[in-house]
Length: 363
Image (tube, rainbow, N blue to C red; front, top):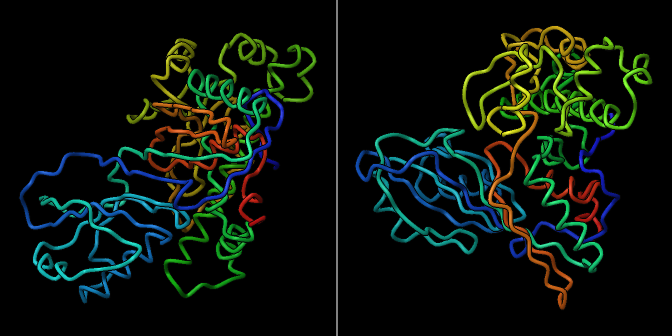
């Protein structure tokens, strides 16, 4: 379904294009490095290179396979990004003559183990929006206040779905047996895109339900939502713009164990950002919602074999949000921190209340 935005304001016009000057990402490591061990950790700054391209450059220079290089997360290509990678310490002397115009080694550390996917707390972003008039700047400031207070829906960004936005169709076809993909990385990537598509569809529906709860009376919504009147009345009492439904799978935030929403005491904890709700990445062995929440989730739960499922935060709380308007340049500059696996472009789209991928296509 069409993306549903949570913030109540009208569309905000500005220009945003991912570039090394206007989109900067700093990876936040999960733990301090020990200073000893058989692994060399490099703090890398790269420009206009994907993480895969950067890894290939190092593997070719060192004469090793890309899989021998550890990394915590994938970073945008059209940006200036800083991230950490690890490699066997014995290759350190071969870095003395390393030189690449798009890559700079900022720091070196030693550590006891290889960096693994997911070994990061999150990412710190700097983003510059352009062609921002004073009215739009005011609306952006107000949007940032709302995000600080309530957080945002944790959609997968457009990057997940490819240039044409249809990678998920290949994943669906692979699972249905109508398409074969021999490349193992692409095979998994397309399936993950389909999982992401289902997740975004579920989250859009839940945001839509929450907005309906805000706008109409419980009796007006009985036929629209197919939920018991008592459930709708309980949702109406919730102050947060995203409404929990009994049976939702919740999780301590920013990490912790999952559990089901059964006691209304959880509402205050959700409001306080102590817990958050999660959505399903459809697949085997994943915890499912129960009760009323299950009826909505099952519509987007179409993968029952071949791959494992998981839970992902459906709602996140960006941290350290700062916004500065530079009227003379018509720029609005943003700084914020997101947990791992979240997309800065989703936050920008939430502020804009529209897709932003088209901004890049204009240049």
